Amino acid sequence: MVQQLTAKGIGVNLRDSARRQRGPSADIAEDSTHDQSCSLIPIRPADPWSPPIRTARRTLPLFVGAACLALALTGCAGEDGPAHARQTPHASTAPKPVPALSAAQARDVITRYSEINNEANTDRDRRLLDTVEDGPLYAMSVSDYTETEGLPAADRKPYKPWSYDSADAKLYIPRLGAGQNRWFAAALSDQKGKAPSRLAVFAERPQHKRWEMVSVVDLDSPDLPDIALDHDGYATAVTADGNKHLAADAKLLRTAILDNFATGGTNTGTKVFAPTKASKRQIEVHDKTGTRFGAQGTTVFTGAANRYTDAYALKTTDGGALILFSHTHTQTDAVAHSGLQINPGKDDRAWLHDVPRTSIRYTFVCNDAATVPARAEPSRLIGYTCARTDASGPPVPSWSDRA
Image 1 (cartoon, rainbow, N blue to C red):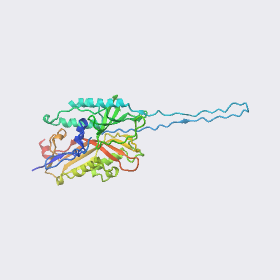
Image 2 (image 1 turned 30 degrees about the vertical axis):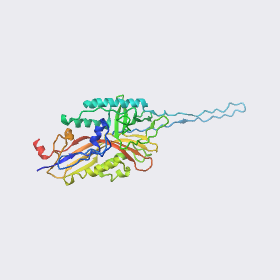
Image 3 (image 1 turned 90 degrees about the vertical axis):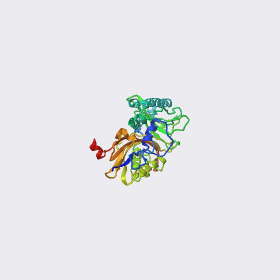
Image 4 (image 1 turned 135 degrees about the vertical axis):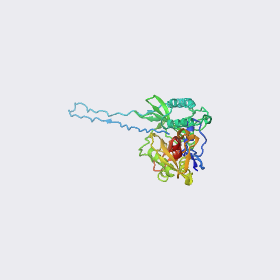
């Protein structure tokens, strides 16, 4: 008799985070994306412990003003000779960085996003959604569409429209140099009068002549990062990758997050990050998910090819930076020996079609936010949001034979 393991995928606030992307934020709770109970019945990917990000690297060009000095020419012609000729030095300066857009324009971008996002979600219109979302966020939202379409019609919940409060959004608009792609960040709330609970990044897509949301992260605390603002209220963009003036760059942060899931932070995770709710959740996902099947199965987390390598960074008042970036990881559940099978759950039907498997590999795309000090001290992971974007695995032999 074949024993059955319940397949529960464990990513990182995966499925919940994907839903939150398009709906009202839920109260902060333990990550259930990856945490799935396992009785001897179907095994499915556990939702990762926090919500789903896209990142775009922005490097500020170095402008050097060239000073042109002319040496004074002197001549000796006696008492009535010409006066000494001296040329006054002139300095040519590079154009001063200008704001990516005005505050009023940024609020219009947020309002437009909410309106079109609602319209697209009502009919799961991917093409329409693609006009206001891009990068990892779009991939996460489309995966939620796919999951819903795999459910029986009776199990599909009707969509409830919602919107971000653009009037009270906290805007972080950087000054950018000539030739730099324009973007801005915003702390958002989905309820008027409520403190912001998410950090989002909007980027201009010049080829489409429009602004699109590329990343959003659910925060664990209402306390927002202290972004350095100039006398006009604008932020300063800094390099997110390869920045020697920061304790860590986006690449190292990404490596540390993957280590939290893969080893529980043994190698780099706990060295790069100070303990926060977000980093502790990731480590707990590793600890609980890796042992949930006992001797009957295994769960392994690994990093995966990441299409979304862009990262955005803003200078903070302590000289450090807020870095917004994305990562991709996988969770592989497998039976320990023949005679066992993993039965996919209903939320996996779109990818696995209710076919029993000997192993299932889930792919998660995640958006992350961390504050990084200028000194050699640990960084702080302040939030992350994930969505399961794919699932696959070999059917059990008996099913293959029938097929």
